[in-house]
Image (cartoon, rainbow, N blue to C red; front, side, top):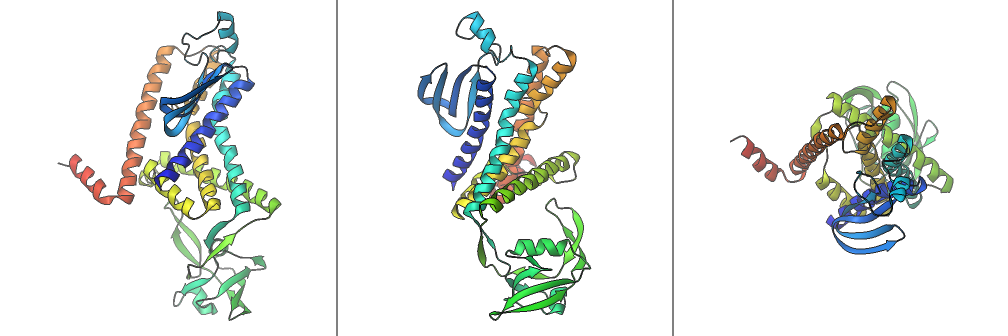
Length: 364
């Protein structure tokens, strides 16, 4: 489990840094070093101007650009000015900085498409339990029925069936089920009911009162359908992730839902055990989260640099080193606090006895 979690984090952060690396090379900025991992360097090989490194801690990587921190660089003064990040126009610097999170978002599309082609194991549309007195019970849906279609739309998974029902309160739906090796047509009207969405908010949705049987099915797409599904999933998850950040900041969603590295490692191990398709789907979701997180206007993150570049473009000159330095220190402090809080949430989820002990220390 831990190994798969490390692999997941390493892949996504190295992809992120590779985006910065490729953009820097394309826009004429020198790259002094590209490291897979960070910390003590285990192996190094210099090719051209760039030293490629493998470092001890495999949780990511980094690129070191010429002139990134206005430090003294190797080479002649003319070379430094031509290849220096700090000497490039603001739009080029912005493009290099934004390339990291954009690469995370783009690679998520690739992962979603690959996942669609390989296939994802998910709950089938077979019914496991029908609540007494529910719309499904009244309509005649029984335990063991497998829903084949709803109003002519093919249904293979429990998730799709539930999604259609939620969107159709009060509507008379034509449901075709497989029962005893034959098919049967049933008409059901979802009842309007208050439910909680993925953000914990109460919403009105259609409800028929059925539970999944637990039977699994492999959902796999053809070549072109897989591409279409991959693009759609990328849009859907990006939208939901951005909405989650907005709701967190506005206080409409509980901060207790934040997850940290322990959750990523645990989930990565579980998804890897469920198959390559599911693991790639998980990687895509985390990649989108990483991309959007890095675009937030917090100093030290890519979004913070982009915010500074926007101010520079308006002012016509760079912010002072002192302002940037103080802002980055504040940003780093915020990130550390966020990481500590997310890790505490992880402990509360997976190791409640530890979180209780930690909590008691602060209340003595």
